[in-house]
Length: 237
Image (cartoon, rainbow, N blue to C red; front, side):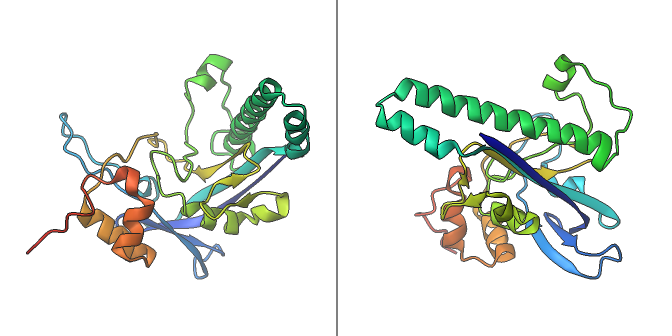
């Protein structure tokens, strides 16, 4: 099998409350893309703040990274051979191995980003247990997962990276191909941590739809698992 990785960093600035603008030049005059994020919308027992990934980007003078890795190039031929032999067991093991290799590559790339490429933690020296506990600065949240549950944001990430040139692509439902692939954003903020957006209400969904240029119905479709209300029941003024 063949593994590949691609990554990049862009000048960035928080735009409004929950968006992030990426720029194509150090002077921040050429807008490349806008990243759209969601904010937690629950009352927390300890009174702590509701988080958005945009919180980890300064209003000016910041940077955001992105990456996509795969360990599955060439996997289809092997899987087809297992299927032809009716060998489900080997197929399952092979897919699991490819997934583990992709995750390992993503973790290794993140380590090199922190210590070498982005280099904001050049002196990092962590043992295996500390790495497993994510005892390092920075996070790599993936579009479609708890902190940024909108899978469609992968399209922006893949366009920025030119991921198709590395053999990665997205299906119409924004699943990654090859399946043994990992992608996400890099945030270097010292306080950045993983979290789940959880359930959100119609006011935020409407705001997100406006930011994305969607109808409310489109936003409700893509964000269905996170809706804290029944979209079939419309509010009556």
